[in-house]
Image 1 (cartoon, rainbow, N blue to C red):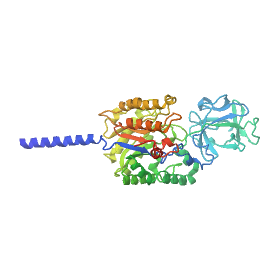
Image 2: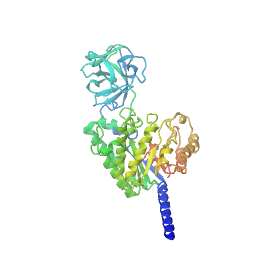
Image 3: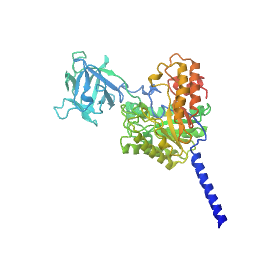
Image 4: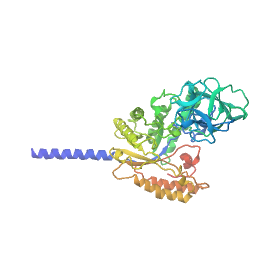
Length: 507
């Protein structure tokens, strides 16, 4: 029995070593990803394609638009006292957070107004029905107002309350809804306000709710079928790229009838992308760019009004996990599926390390339920956070990737940098940052977003070429790869297609 026993032991050892080799082989990508993001396609970003919003009536009154309202008679700003939870007054000489109202659009003229602490302005139900308060956490009829603009000066408005009367400022401490609103538009009419519109997000929620349920489906389906087409995948494959990172929104999992204001059709577009990717030998990274409630309050996560409300409940996290489950199950058998990114750019401190760790663990498990080979990408948090904070979690997973985004933008330190200083920053600072998150026995690293754009004015073509070359050289050391933001954009340097066609970047 001794020879048989030794043979059996050797066989078991070989099987064990093969298993170990297989497990660790899955952590090593068989290609280095050289990708481009298909931004602005299945998740709207207004700055990428501003014309998408052109046909919206009252397009400067979209969800999340921030208004500051100054009474013409007392010369003071309307204010939610204490930021909300009590009365509305008009006694502030300057406008800040408490004096800023965020619109929730009902239609092109009717709105609900959200205040600093997230309550909604409405009629005081406990008084005589004409007082103004900001106490409701969920808006209804009593919190729905109409905004009437002066045809001769659109910055002058009246606000019609749900009782049929207009707001008026009787004193700095007394704002009521009992004016007929039939006076002139001059400075002696207490129902007139001078409006300062300081803008707001222009994302998927704004474009679909702006057009409304009748027109939005037509607009979005035309956009999805024309913005990215099969020829783009041919271009990608013939220009030194081997993958696409495709941002999607959580509502795609409810296609063809997602909750309003979202419209169906983006899932068919994603299906098309997988077919084109297979035809042209392109790998696909599915990126959950917009999670329910918004993980960062930015337009690219489809926030309604700039609020960041993702991850605040177990139900919300499970809803997000279900989206990952749906997407992975749908595409697990596609040879083009290369990776699933569980969420894009969660923002700290709103998204805590505890919350994101809980979600990433659950998200990893559902990806593995359907695929043993797809890489699982975990985005580092934006804002104050340790760049290696996900290592303890991700190192315990096979096929895990940490996503970092590097832009020489969005920070004051870049405002006065010269061409050479920007290039030096890439070679020195970015190189060190990438090395910090790259280890031999930890998760892979992915520079999931970067761009050859900066704050430098008057830079020439050679300057851009050298800046792009520096980034390609440094980010080429990322163990998983990199992805340029983005393929198409009205801003040329953010448009990789334009950059390649015009010789600004060579891959």
